[in-house]
Image (cartoon, rainbow, N blue to C red; front, side):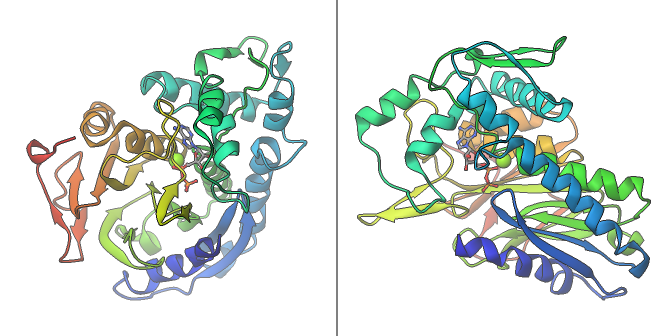
Length: 346
Ligand code: ADP
Ligand code: MG
């Protein structure tokens, strides 16, 4: 988890090294929430007191949806698997519905019922280990988003099989960032940076004038080292990378984005996927989903999705984008280079 602590420095780097001049001093607060270091930064003294309220929204999302809290709504849903439907808050029901929608869109590559597999591997916890194949097969038998049954009229959700478990780890940080941004917007904060462990929302324009410059993390280096810079306004910039959470056993690295087909960490040549979109919930889900789909299907889906841009950083140091990078994305590290997707092989 140590590398998570670099999130704060990552943010500082966004603001210092990537900016041209520092016209206003950042006022930042960092807290640990949703399993990561969360930093909210505003730039006008008058906006500072709104940070607290934005964090209240983040903690609310955490208290409803974290699988690490026994009394969260998601934990209650999981404990109740195989029994009757339960009613949930608007927020939890909304995110369950979104997660199921993205599962359908990706044919289950992204699947919120991945919980039993996530617990089995324990990646990111002290109990991370390489499971037996039989254990993986048992967990896989429980994963199927069709068996997460939602009723929007009554706001109920139900897991049809005992042992099933929802895990919203691939989408909840994005939702929390949207919630924090909404609070700041409602409070008329014109610009801010919300950074939840590399899940960035760059709100408004940089100091009210022109695009923010957000670094895309070097997958092989400590946080704060970038290979590219994205120029964005009022957008989420969310990355799913193999480097985010992993453990090493017998010289093999096992990371935290898991295949719902074979039950192992996905190895498809992708080092990270960054998604830029107005909506951080969508960007978070898509970053995981496009990673899971692989470069070919992932690029196709990204191109079919309006108002979304995706950057695939491959392990061979090629960089693929869903739209022409001209004007919004520059590579800053000469070891990396853009390629056309006709050159992609899976
Ligand atoms: P991070 O949490 O590092 O920002 P992601 O947003 O990509 O990264 O989410 C990864 C998390 O999503 C995992 O830690 C796990 O909780 C969950 N997850 C893993 N594999 C899948 C999958 N195939 N579909 C949905 N969620 C997944
Ligand atoms: Mg995600």
